[in-house]
Length: 415
Image (cartoon, rainbow, N blue to C red; front, side):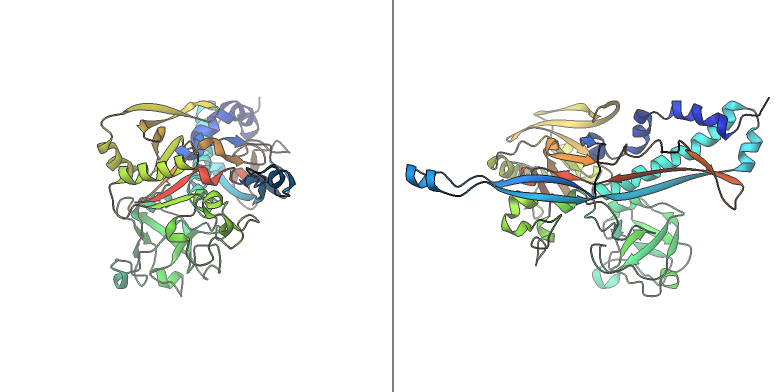
């Protein structure tokens, strides 16, 4: 009788890793979980349209209204597909040691498989709050900017410490002077050996400037291979006030010049200027209400959520919000009856501290080519023998984009 091996384990793993099970591993971002999905994507890009202005053929005079050639104004979005990949590797020695012990064999494979799914889920979650450039964060500028980063040492500090959730030991990082939407990545790389989640201190295996000769204390950080290749996340659709300077909105976004109608095409942007967070959210929400927006969710970082929760002692209750078409995944939320309607306030670890998004989740969609991520392939081979190594590898990937049908019914708030 043949021993229990990868071939024998594959059908067992396929039964275990149902699409719903995979989502429980991948959807660590609450926003990703609740956002509607469309797995039937195809073509060179995802196409969508918005009616940014209704017809002007209206008048108190019939001859004016009925002879006008005006019609509604539509904008066509062409959203580029972006891909992400992850791999799990199990050595032949580990599998041999498991022998014919089916349980031990499957556990060894499951441990690494779940690691790959979790890693790709973290990438998707972080990209969902990226502008498409793929930057995971930015250094704090060093002593010249009141920070502590020093690229001539092994330790640097993130400008926004909450971004540290996106980093982990063993990660290979690149640097650039830009956020990935322009420019180029710098030559060289560093490997992380330690991450302080709360202070935002990143420690490399050697001095940062030794691994990247032109490293600077104001650089942006990228996972190796990600520069300029992320899908466009929520910040790309809803442009914050601090990002609207210059030609930020006149530069074509998915084929559209948003400077012609900044609010309807790039969302409501509100700056609180240090005011109480609750007040800023209510103000932005009422701006949406004025535009006939009907927000359903408010997304923010856990630390900002803690401040809000202290203020919402009345007119609120704790509820569980489930993922889109997957009741196996649930997230705690505060349901708050705001002046602009009832909304669910949720935390997302990938949402940067200091920013919140007021969303009508019905206007959002995450289209993909197949499941997100893929759990099966055309050749039905989920595990492959690794060339040049005594090991087996598991691969998973996604090809996805984001789409918002009504940006003007959503808001970005900078506290």
